[in-house]
Length: 265
Image (tube, rainbow, N blue to C red):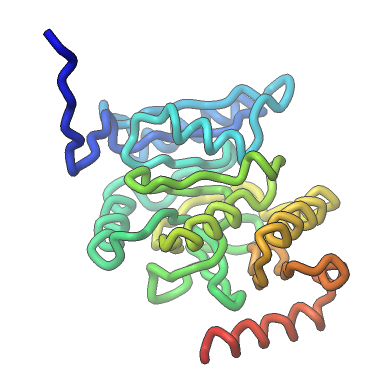
């Protein structure tokens, strides 16, 4: 019998509803997160938990980890999250409600999270952490340009990837995903799903090195971009000499106003 062509179906089929994926350095803390998720309703057969073992060394980082997870996950939605979050507040029905409402409103949504910044740096969050208690920005879902990495839900019906060929590390991979989504006409949002995150964020030398790497990526793309990352905004242009000033607050503010004026024309 000769080989017959196979028809591609219009609708994608997924084995699971949600896949949770985590970069693990402390297994006890990871298990605490998993158990809290199970108590929040993520404990039935349509849920999958997978992890990267970084206890001894970093086999995967944020960029390579997301791209591998997107390949191996069985879930319709990939929840790429930190090991130090706890599902102490909202439960599975609330997440499903948020995703369905967003699907009805904007079928082109690609990523959602619980904290991020809008096009010109306006913050949005629904989180409790060491710095904020029950932070609740109104009128969600809110369209954003960047998300915090502690909790990301990626819609796997779209073809999306992190820039792992150019970038490495554990900072700005959510910003990278959001910007990559934007480049192909997809959107990112903060939704009304309340979690507890044990960390209030970490801005150090590694973070600013990540900004430099991302700036160089945007420069090679020949773009002008104001980048409202969650911890610290910056900008990028095709010009190396101008990018040297992209952490100066006054110049960042001026560059943001120019980009805003151009976009409003």
